[in-house]
Image 1 (cartoon, rainbow, N blue to C red):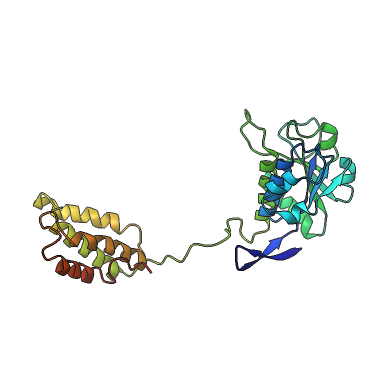
Image 2 (tube, rainbow, N blue to C red; image 1 turned 180 degrees about the vertical axis):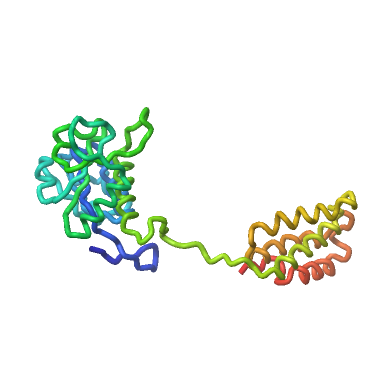
Length: 285
């Protein structure tokens, strides 16, 4: 399912609301529940189930911490026990940082996200269990799940905040649905290298400006210094727009020199520098 909402001021965006249910077992703090809702909304999940929340429900602290993930908060379902919370689900993962004495398969988050996606695509209802903030899930609660998911964390500091754990799994769920797992929310602009005439013009302009300021000293080393400059500045593959920016910078060196005050002849020097810069200083479009 997907909803259409207004994002920002004037742009409509599709709000993703499919995916596995997130089940929090005896969560203690409303703020944590709210941050879980926010993490879910970030990555397209919306079904939050609470098992016997310590401070009851609804919770204004949770709503405040959810940062406008109201579609998650408004549809929270509360259950008295875990068995009731997962009764309608076909497949359930239990998250844990501790090794358990059982025979359940153990997966990492990437593999678990893909497994959840494949089950979702064939119409199965799935869920992910998260335990209490202080000590996680009891063994008998893990026993109600089909498989275990655990995170590759620092073994000496393995405990995650519950919202962090939910965010990791929600991210893997979202990533598993992308055409390519390296896709991003938006792309960088096309950066085509400028034709060489632009680059050569810039290098000539820079060398003239540096020569005027006495940069190439001693004179016998000038050819090698120019070679080094060209080697450095031809490496990045500058675009036309970037070269315009650089020529504007170099043009500012032509406005005045250390030996000549800005006053006398300044307008003429500035006009000459602007002509060298082509589009002129500040033309960045």
